[in-house]
Length: 390
Ligand SMILES: Cc1cc2nc3c(=O)[nH]c(=O)nc-3n(C[C@H](O)[C@H](O)[C@H](O)COP(=O)(O)O)c2cc1C
Ligand SMILES: CC(C)CC(=O)C(=O)O
Image (cartoon, rainbow, N blue to C red; front, side, top):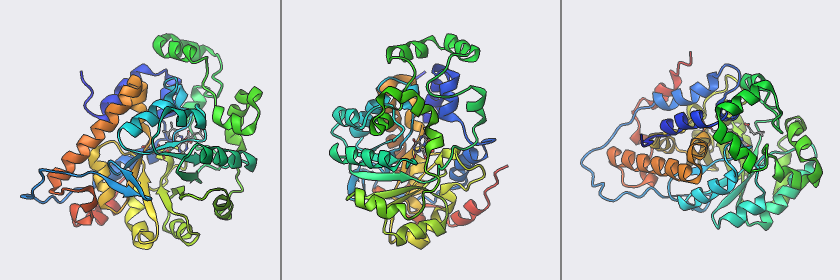
């Protein structure tokens, strides 16, 4: 059967990946409440279409932070992508470029900044985790500048990892360690196992290791990465980052009007409203729920991007109608990657683009830039307020 939707790719990814990898990709914090809430928030919202408009030609392009995007979407940062395919980040970056979208490379990537740049001439952004040893961040930012990355996105919702039971059950650690459970998992997924052998075994956080200057100790560093996050990170870090980086700075992981306002006061260029795909704080709000209030407060001063649960072109239209400039795609491109490598990512991005354009036409809008609150049901604020997350 030809995959027709992101959900189809999710099903194929579930079959093809070893359980340890799929659970890491898919799982949410605690009992998955926030993960479900992200989808429910989109599903609550209904449209208010206009008919008898000439929609012969539609234009899905927008401009975000001065950069042209073929549609209001960005391939977002995800760490440890080498768990799904060898040279995963290169393929994600190439597919994003082919689709006319930026790619955000995670600082927990399994490919080097320099290798990803060699793979594509596309628009690359760097996502930064700030660790206790600030020299690591300084080195990564320098390397990203040298490699002509355009935007710095600092993630601030991860002083520690969220509670992820599935990773505990699977004994998930890098490097992957032999255990009876892992061996059984590998036997059930021989193709995945062969791919890992082909890439030289367990994926490694090579990017982080290069900036640490401890190439010999990559695995130990990967295993302890989460314990090394700088839990003392505060708003003072924005001034430090400004000294390191001349280009746009985006703060990822904002979930309140208060923090959005703070970011605007400090002069950052953009924010990503995000609960990290439901993987960090359990019972966090969904970004789409708080988007209208955030836009009221900072919409004139900041570029606002949202993520969490984007699986359909109609979701992109809803986010844009509520005022977001663009969405970040997290799991969706990874499903394509895990299912069929680069071709799968191309298809996922193509499906989202097609669905987005169909939604635009059915809403009676010719341009993505024309989407505003009038495209949504008049009661959309109530629809979000009544969210039932049982
Ligand atoms: C497997 C996985 C790894 C992730 N790694 C990172 C990361 O390294 N840095 C980061 O800022 N966010 C990371 N995220 C969060 C995503 O950037 C994004 O916020 C989230 O996935 C959006 O939700 P969605 O997956 O429902 O689209 C990760 C998410 C997933 C699913
Ligand atoms: C390596 C991790 C810190 C990546 C991440 O952000 C996540 O798993 O959600």
